Length: 169
Image (cartoon, one colour):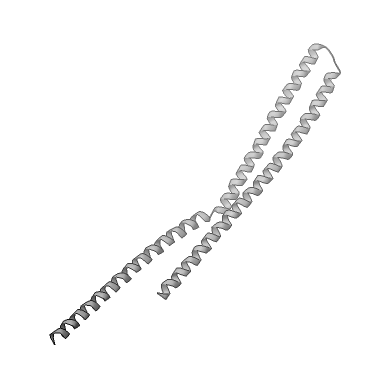
């Protein structure tokens, strides 16, 4: 029985170590993912700020050009050109923003995958091992119960035989 208790304590200790390892891996994964999110948002904010500054500077320059005046037809063409350039800048900015977001998503996935690589198999291994150990313990308990039952029957039979013998005398 002492061996069984020692084995049980050893299993519990191993299970605690496995759980602690999983906790560390998940904590590391989420810490890395949070860092990637922070870096991505920071990069996106800097990009958007630069884009706004560029839009503003180019809009001011275009308005100055329009204020110089000219023929109505030339002004209309300049206004259309200003609108087209603004749309082109906005579209280019949106593409760059999407690239930053996609890179951030990829980095988050990579960080999580890298940190959790061994965790899934460790969790499965621990579950399989625990199940196998439980089955072994169950089998041992059944054997012990059967042995004790057999011993009890023998004892009863011996006592019965001894009682019969004593009654005959």
